[in-house]
Length: 253
Image 1 (cartoon, helix red, strand yellow):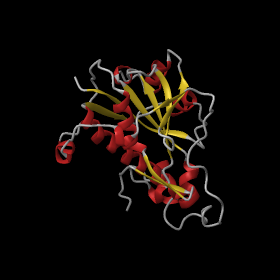
Image 2 (cartoon, rainbow, N blue to C red):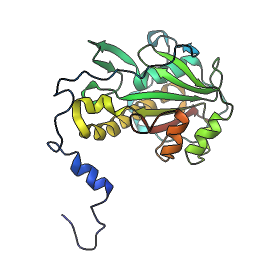
Image 3 (tube, helix red, strand yellow):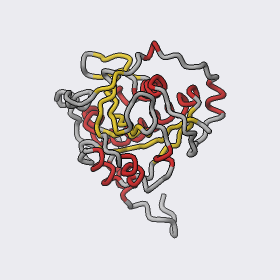
Image 4 (cartoon, helix red, strand yellow):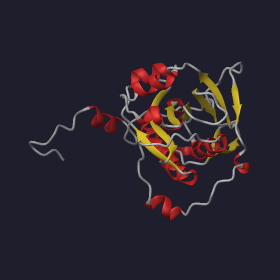
């Protein structure tokens, strides 16, 4: 209920909530019998691809779940020590790993997603990873591999600038950049699916925080970024695919 003197509730946020209420949208594409969108954005097979260790072959020290939750905090200062490829593979698997593809229509992964729609792509800014040249990569979750996107020596500074010059982007060993492909979610849920994209981003990043504790890493989630600049940097249009969340990772000092 509106209270006199309170801030107006008629801004874009309130309009978004009203227009995505249940029952406020037309039937979704799934209801209309239209085929689902692809499970993953295609990649150019001519690009360099980095194989990742299989999840079952990665040995990670056991961490007590209660300790991981109680000690969780954002860490912005990192040691100069690089991550191993095994550690990177583990973090990628814990945040978007595909456990099973079902009928070519949906995937079961290591994180929750509304209706198992899993509408994210994971880009990885690599600054210090053993055996992987610095640059921008994309995680091919269906294949559990990394595809090179850019080896521009200025890429980390461009990412940092797009994140409003937050210094821990430059200091991180890797930075996760999650993009959303809304068609995957709206196919089932219509415009209400945009709400679920943001909920799913929280699921993925929380898994990153918890998984990082097992490899002696700290994480800092970032929501403050220049949307247009970052979408341009990633080569996406900002509508059919857009950046939704960022997180830096590095060894704790």
